[in-house]
Amino acid sequence: GFKCGIVGLPNVGKSTIFNALTSAGAESANYPFCTIEPNVGIVSVPDSRLDELARIVKPQKVIPTTMEFVDIAGLVKGASQGEGLGNQFLGHIRQVDAIAHIVRCFDDDNVVHVDGSVDPVRDVDVIQTELNLSDLETVERRIQRGEKQARSGDKKLQAEIDVLQKVRACLDQGLPARRVQLDDEQWIILRDLHLITAKPVLYVANVSESDLDGAHPYVACLRGRAEEEKAEVVVICGSIESEVSELDGDEKKEFLAELGLAESGLDRMIRAGYDLLGLITYFTAGVKEVRAWTITRGTRAPGAAGVIHTDFEKGFIRAEVISYEDYVRVGGENKAKEKGLMRLEGKEYVVKDGDVMHFRFNV
Ligand code: GDP
Image (cartoon, rainbow, N blue to C red; front, side, top):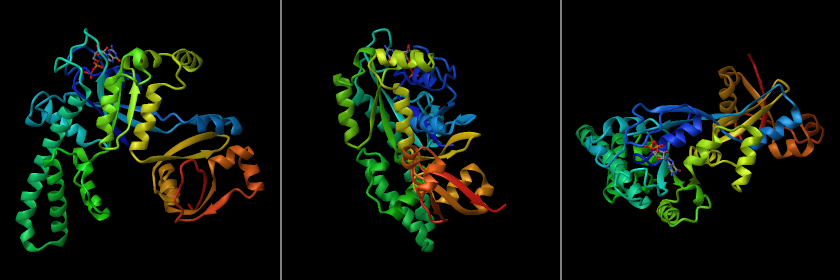
């Protein structure tokens, strides 16, 4: 599955948000390092299109698609030098595909801040620095190893060293590896290096209950910082989310409506994480089940079929495709067929977000 790691300094609300996300029950306590092992939670990706499809098809089951969140604790100043749970932390963060960086934007005298005051930009920089230092170490090591081997005149190795040197220059300026200027081929090389700061990031402003509108100066500062790297900011309130996560259905809707919200902050955060990972959704819609499936943007029809079953990919013949908009507008598969809105697509077809698909395959 695709994993989004939750990182941030101690006491910014990581566990609170993670628990609300997954209702997994990891302990939330008012001291650093309370979550020692990384906690992995699987969450449903909210998608109102599923409800629309279910309304038309009336299936026995409706199955949303999922993604994973990993609560990664232990990042403190000096982590790259082994402070706190530094090395353990860095090992875990290397294994995620994208990063949700939780930043404290709430005042609360009862909740200790590791640096004595609330300052979102400083906090972001503390973490950024640790991750940069860790990557710098990795990059230096590879450059050294590569240069020894490169005497043999290996072109591929030389290409890797070129990328590494560019990344080193970028990290030396205090910028994350994701901001390095590379061509497409070089990006592929970079991706294989699994650097932490090359992973896409979104910032989550954890605000007080009274600041859900995102107008607080703390949030403005964080937005400014995020804009430098064109990263998204999601504003949520951890303590409200933890209340919301205990409600269901109508209760939840009412509670959110009282707060003037159309949906929970967590739903927004999950979707932002899904987008950040470059993921899109296609649907299958039958009377047994209406279901959402996850693929990466750019996946062709056989690859999309393979998410359901490898046999679907191996024996792929064609895909019957109706766009979500057409499907809902005309009221289902049969009407779409009548109106000529169902397309037959082959192996080269690049699946689009919202496609309602049916695969034909040989067994
Ligand atoms: P972590 O160390 O980043 O995992 O932080 P926790 O989730 O354990 O939260 C640390 C403390 O901050 C706990 O006492 C939480 O109840 C509190 N906290 C978390 N979110 C909020 C919030 O939105 N507002 C306030 N006032 N306190 C919060």
